[in-house]
Amino acid sequence: MKHSFVRHSIKRQFVMIFILIMIIVILLCWLVNTMFLGKYYYRSKVTAINNAYAFIKAASENDSYNSESFQKELDEICSKNNISAIVIDENSETKYASSNGGEYIEMSLYGLMVGLPFGESTVIREEEDYCLQQSWRSGNVYLEMYGRLSTGIAFLMSIPLEPVNESANLANKFFFYVGIIGAILGGIIFWLVAGKITKPILRLNELSEKMVHLDFDAKYDGKEKNEIGLLGENMNKLSHSLEQTISELKSANNELQRDIEKKEKTDEMRREFLSNVSHELKTPIALIRGYAEALQEGIGEDPESRDYYCEVIVDESVKMNQMVQKLLTLNQLEFGREVVQMERFDLTTLIHNLVEQGEILAQKDGIRLEMEEYPAHHVWADAFMTEEVFQNYFTNALHYCSGEKRIRIGMEKFEGRIRVSVYNTGDPIPKESLPYLWDKFYKVDKARTREYGGSGVGLSIVKAIMESMNQKYGVKNVQGGVVFWFELECADAAEEDEKGKT
Image (tube, rainbow, N blue to C red):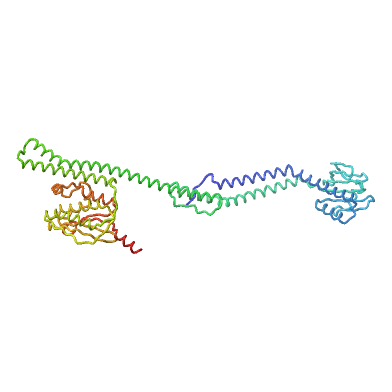
């Protein structure tokens, strides 16, 4: 990714600060050299000649100026500080003469002792046994100290004073040029070094830009052990935290959207439910009212007519009661108010008993009922709800059975499950109607449903029961008829597994 131009980049600021510091240092050095170098140089020479005087005085007091160590140590002092020195005793015998002094300094000492000045001089400090002065000879400046100690030792020391101001100006010019070159080279080096420092910062900037656009895949992979590395690690943690937070927010938003859709669907179902209930109750209420008014007006005065009218009223009221009961059951299932009691029971015995109870109804309609002898199959389910599901399948089979008029009950065990199927001969269900069979009040043949008193709620109850138990169910057209089926979890498999373990 190409870095965008940053007008006030840290890299440029670092380099400018470095160059500015270099310029300030150069100016300060120039100022110090100009103002204090001469004074420092002069004081250092005064200190050097005072130290040499103190050494000579100490040697004279302990009478060690005749020793080789005195010669050697004074030689070191003079050569180190560029001092020309001569020392003579009270007998005018030379005890020490520096190699750089020669006859000139010896003559100077004798002349000073007898009061003969050599060149122009200015006394700086005069004590009992020495005099410190500044002399000018042949265009050169010297710092000189001469005198006679109480022991009779006479001495003369001379240090040439360089033209310090001229040297300071020359040093300042040289330092200025060297400083400019150093600042330029230092700026270039600092530019390269600053690039290594700012490179991870630019990577962090890229990472933050991606985070702004909610791209959390990019991670900081720097290996720095400094504050930038710590910042990168925290940026990675922040990225992960933001990704989790946004994921949670999206999940919550999605759940809220689903709740809104569910509420809208529930409202739509409620309106549809009220419309369907009103439609379903309209006909029986109209029949009950019509026959009741006929009885009230005495239209059917003979006993047979009255009995017929009463039978119609009772029959319609029974149908209304059944429909209301089914609707209440369906409502409890759909809204989770009906508690599912999972228990272990013999499904074969349950189905066999229900088939025996329905055999009389089948024979009445001339329907042949078939069911093989199946072994006991234990399942985990709600026995009452299972009975309700089978009864709805069986009742539908009785009402829609035609042709050969045959109903076959089947049971099949596979993969730890038991499938119960109810097959009846007759016309197949239209393909376009199959997806809607489980909807409330949906009727494929409304006239026939009305004929046997169906409400269109039975299969909706089946759907609600099976979903409450988290089990599968369905319907399909087969050759010569229709088969409805449902599955339950087999309890026999669990028992066999436990037996195998023991």
